[in-house]
Image 1 (cartoon, rainbow, N blue to C red):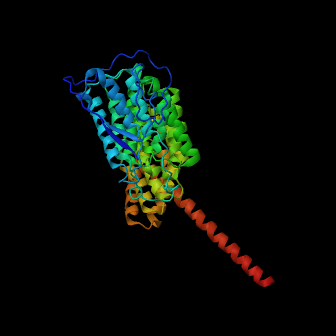
Image 2 (cartoon, rainbow, N blue to C red):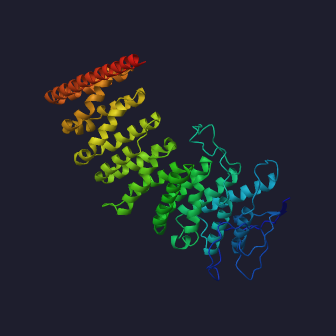
Image 3 (cartoon, helix red, strand yellow):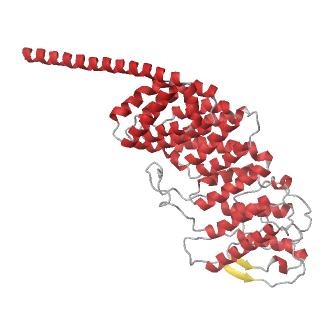
Length: 476
């Protein structure tokens, strides 16, 4: 059981926390997973969570920071952090309800204090603040209830998990966010505590099942990336590693979409000419993210990142289109529609020279999509001819494209079951006819000759089988 100890209140006219200058700066690294609670500390050394005597059974009711003398606020601030280090079991809503409320109120006060900017924290206070935050957020995540959730097609909204400890976690994340974005924070000091170990553990938390937690993590990591230039290469590298494990090992991760949202903003800020490491990231991580079956869960964010690369450097269009063709789905119609949507966005930013380099494999693949018996796939492929920029690219290269796409169009005209697909095919066929009627007639003539030859081969094959049957009947 937790004990509640009440402390007397002291009044003071001042509002801001005025921390004393520390006698020494601790050089030891921050233990981000330490579990420390309240204790009494002597006045002969700085008050920290590290030198506190753990006693998690005691929860003190402390006065507000603004109600004590300036000289005592540093000690009181640390004691409040000690209270916030105590962990509770939220699976039982009745157990320790009073103690949970004390911690919630204490966290709320700390959030308001940091947000108001009236608290200029020294290095010891910052270290202990980060230690308390680490104690609360860095924890073992609950196991996945469905190991292959996305693979089994379970609705994400129906299977949404909400962390029961969120009333406290939210305040801790809000406190971290306010600390990171605070104008009073000195990045040279803060980077000692928000170090690579802290950032790495934050990235690991993106696999949390609660979407509210992932949203906070996304915002905070993005702010850290923007404020701490020293962390930028490390953050990009660790996100790469998350993608590699997801693509080639597990195919299960809850935070791919949020990580891609961060990268979308990062890619938008890449300087030109683009560094080789960024192009390798595109080829080795972003394009292979089209491979997993669960791509639909994060495809919107992935498409934005891919489009950012093409907008930054149009010469990458050929690499991206060939990458899409490499991972093009064969039997998943829903996934194929997503690929066609993304392909249109890429082609909108593709220049003629890059288009010419990949048009042969591209239109061979589009021909199969146009002939798809799934009407949504066929419709989406034919809708590409509604895009003016794509039509212009096709018109410039019609003599290379029409021989490839003519046969799929003819098959749709006389064989597709869906009337809407039949109408769209007729429109595309008419567009090619208007582009170059003479060449269209040549392609039509060649197609009719091949069709006639194919009919002759079928008849010859049937005649051969008939002769074999007759010969077998005579022998029998």
